Image 1 (spheres, rainbow, N blue to C red):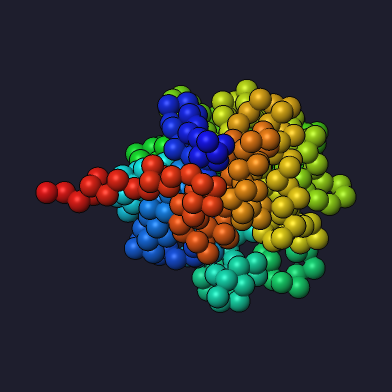
Image 2 (cartoon, rainbow, N blue to C red):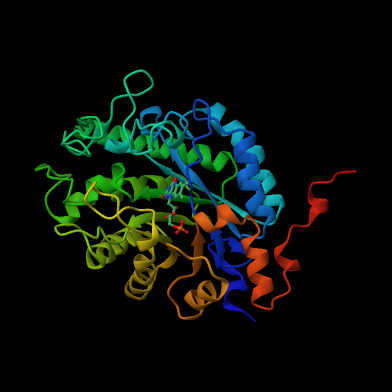
Length: 363
Ligand SMILES: Cc1cc2nc3c(=O)[nH]c(=O)nc-3n(C[C@H](O)[C@H](O)[C@H](O)COP(=O)(O)O)c2cc1C
């Protein structure tokens, strides 16, 4: 038996194997509402045998989107549109998960095919952005990043309430795993890292104070997200730049998150500043081993991500205790049937990992 194809129970949710699709922005929603693109994108990977399908960074407010075409869960129309997609994903034997977040000072960006995802949008289809301070992502302004509004304590409390409201909608929409986005320089990560958070109030200063916003959010979300369903958080487990966080700070944050009721840490990296290493790219493979360190130090379940492409490589990561779930991003875009192909490559019968089609073919 291959470790990659053993089931995993987290709370009352069982994953049929250890292959998940990483959250990936599709820049294809209109007014935050998902559509046929998302149904096909998410549904294809569910049919393709992945046990866990994590829907892209989904904004808790309209100004929390990365681009105008990002998904949202700030209103009921968005919730109603995605509910049938989740039902389909589940009927294919996969667990529908979602990442909720706020883009912070990296919001209001162009879609990739219209100038690059990481260039701020112009005033026409852009919006005001928010951060721990009024320092822009790129203070030189060479890439036109907006100057964010420094959030007041009232703004922070209101934002926590927005996370809670989106979590409730996620539950009603049928998601079975919820992930808080606290990585890649977006709002929650920008409060965590000293590279960005230079506040001198209760939400800045030492590590515990910088983590206050995330921990309050995790606690508040846990209070509405059922105890029997897993709650995850994506962290940049390394900032990969002088003056930023390394794995030790993230182990401490993860321990606090565990106390707040978080079950799983999705171990990503980078993205805090333009000079820090990017959150997507070949070098993300460096962060994979850190999932094992965090797992050993905290007793939390971990998901590893970053250039995982090969079935044997993924199997070894489960076997040697680096992680409980392997997440694939770009490779899952190239091959929606990666899990089935991986089973074949590892000499496993792929049938139990393929959909039972009569779930959807009604009489
Ligand atoms: C098109 C695209 C969109 C992405 N969108 C998100 C996202 O919405 N949320 C997130 O946390 N990471 C996002 N990522 C990062 C991936 O989840 C993943 O961490 C990264 O691509 C490294 O994994 P890989 O080497 O398997 O692609 C995105 C990556 C790609 C390629």
